[in-house]
Image (tube, rainbow, N blue to C red; front, side):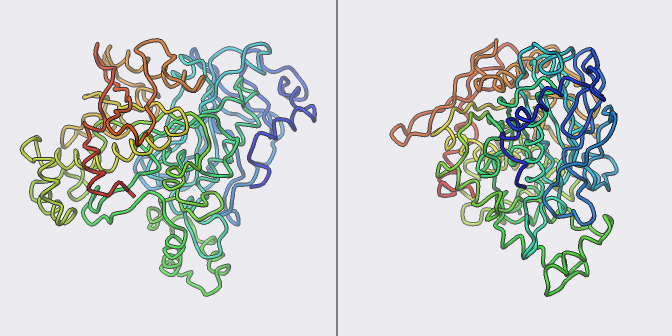
Length: 551
């Protein structure tokens, strides 16, 4: 991907005189006075202006990764003549049903949306100060989701920021690996970096500041951004990072989200991925001693043939050019890009998975809980039961959700923050709304609390639907947008109006009793303030049980 990354491209634009062209529309005519026409380096796009924001949808940031470009690093998009309509989101990347009803069969999916506050600004308006830029990397377990599901108009308008949301290749298309296949295990990350590079080259035309870019993401998006923190090829592409419910230390015990799930960590060593790719190729009728022949066979398969293996490839690989080493180990060793970080989790992360634990549709039963406790913890079962006494919870499902929230999510996020805080400013939060807006129209099978992804309503309208808030939740949402956008502007959410937010303390071996500051985020008069996350989520217990190494 030489030529995609870094900010040198911005200097090139200026030296060739193209920067001045950003003020022009088609054939050198002035841009639309309402700011709906913008010239990118591949052509002019026309978006739609609303009361809060102007939105440009479906802008290609890379060539369609189809045919011979399946499982290759992203290439630049082809220029287009005239004005490209940018009022409809680009197709979502290929995936099964889940976040998208009916899923998607599109491989031509490398598109992004840009949302900017209504009115002229920056290059399109002439004199306004360029705005901070937030680039959102969506979650979905690396096998589902789409950038177009996140409507950022509230964030852009209230926070006076330019927000970019993007698609990237998912599942087998984004993280497949095979011996000898360049880019194995990181095509989705390469897509994200291509989008970051597009932002560096083009965002000034939308009023954004290419010198003040924050990458933000939740779940798989947070894990992606943790990877970019340690990726040599991401150097210079961003200035701050937000990690929501996704960290470099993310790992899990056996049986965490379904019975029979093996213990693992989010990043996978390249040889293991390539071995899985070889087995999958054979299963698909493309086994061959010659890697090139096998990959050619796989590239010729239609999307329908790959549906069954979509979720076999949902872990980014390390030992690769994009990720030379495990990001968890790189962060522990201090080998990462020195930028401010905002990081956090929801209080009840695991209720979402536990609510469909039995047969992927029912909440965990008492019988399943007893069996899984023994299967998972073995000789440590008594210790875990003593720390999480069943009678202290309303059900076996809630007990298991507490265990897996702490072990998989909260304490791994906390561990990454402690390591990062040794070198860079970190601000940590816990979203704790006990009754946030629902994420599914289906009735819950158990109390959900602040489940995984429930904080997203406070930042975005999701799936084309506005958030349904109580007045107190509305105030919390406004406060969170202030925090997030002030972090994007300055690197310090504590500069936002409202309750103060001190920085997370450094991890200091000389201060073993230190309690780093974590900001609790919940509705109500006393909902925003300090929480002892390590105590609330039993992180000392889990560190002792795992020997201090969650991975």
